Image (cartoon, rainbow, N blue to C red; front, top):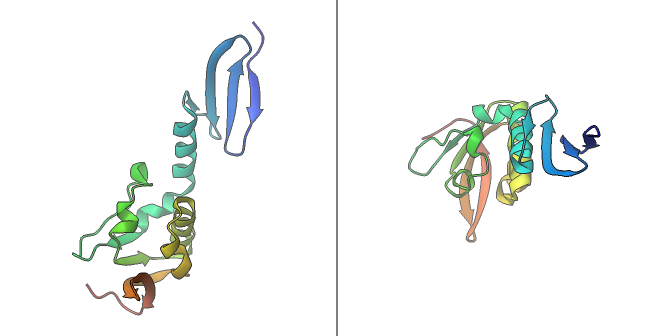
Length: 135
């Protein structure tokens, strides 16, 4: 049997065998997956741990803490009324998520760490930075 073929990709390595349909995906830290999307999600989750500190509030003042295992859940975007970004690292990971998911209302208006509140303008959602949190 020949050694496994290796192909380097942006976020992971594909390990395959010439005469076998079995393809494995290796994350940067050596963790092996048999599913490409599980491997990609693992890498993304590992690279954006600062999202855990982001606080998101609904209009009913319920906190939606980020669950890294449920990162792409649209509840974060659809029901958010207040967002608290404590530092630059949280802000960068937050904007990465917004761009990755296409949640343009977030990355168009939320431009720095701080407390951001959603408001309506001509039927469109907008965000403004406030000095202190008012719940």
